[in-house]
Length: 333
Image 1 (cartoon, rainbow, N blue to C red):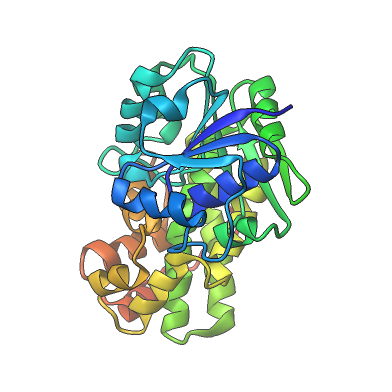
Image 2 (tube, rainbow, N blue to C red):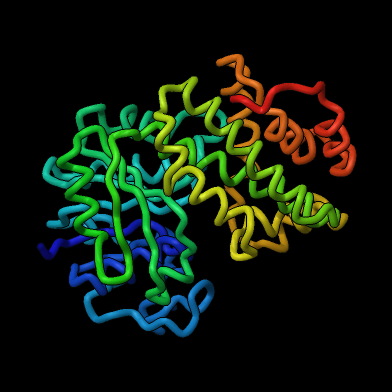
């Protein structure tokens, strides 16, 4: 089935998904809010800033007009940072026909409220709007280069998750479905915090043993919080949980990991953010995840130390010392 899809967000991930959809035979409209950023994409027929050398198919158009982007589309796919997710959705709302499905590939909690993005969606559009989240181990550059990838599509309604998965599914991407929207969203958010932690440890030169321990105990934190908020244990053992966690914690394509590396090597938070030059979702998510954990009385010691380093001036080496000095306990979750 060929569909018409509007993709909102011209960063690396939004562009990669637009390329994927166009190669799958769909008509794709890629939208960005800044004319100065969008114009070169249309002129060059590539995103030279984030994905240089990868040409746009003819079925992929680029623009800044929301009404044009959404006219007659089957699916609106939002791929913007979490801190502008609500504002983007509010801009889309007047142009969204009841027949348009919604999906998002944004990973994170809403800064300031700690809301899951499906909760933000329900506040803006109503709980009945067909909506799905896309997550899993998927670096934008590899998707853009047609390298094999697998993701999870989660929605409350199984039929709608299947519809969105079918639009994404192609020769180089396999899309699995789930009904665990909360678990898939939480996995995609928390893994960024843990990637910062492993980056800091590697930047400090603490080695592979420490990295493996942080990933494993970080997964335990993810599962504890995930179960407390209503997620399913199986989700955290899958693509949107351990799959995305391992990818993001171990490969330097991850901006969250690179951010942690810079801090571990002695850089300041502001300098590390400037070096990355893109949104580092885990920086804001650490604060919101910790607030959520405290509300649910869930222990998240790694997340707590990341928050202290990023937002309270904690020395990174001291943060690791605090983790190692914790009381002995059973490994059981």
